[in-house]
Image (cartoon, rainbow, N blue to C red):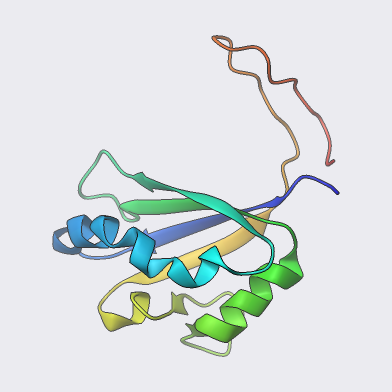
Length: 124
């Protein structure tokens, strides 16, 4: 099996909502926990409280199909455009929008403090 795909999900929301959004992250993603192909997530918070996307989620999925099936089942697009912001159980309950795309790793630069990761110049 090849390396999982990387989902980068940029969340925009009013600054006053960020603390609650982060505190409720596990509830927000509960639907993904049992989804086929879901490989975990890391939530990141911007250091700058005025950032356009104060919260960024990096998740891993086995395939485009697994991710798309979960999106179809639990989330909706606000427009017919497949790249439109997602709205979902918690996301759609307020002025929070998610902009997501799947990516494949094309290069790894190893951590000079921990050089056990080997660089790669192409897809796996």
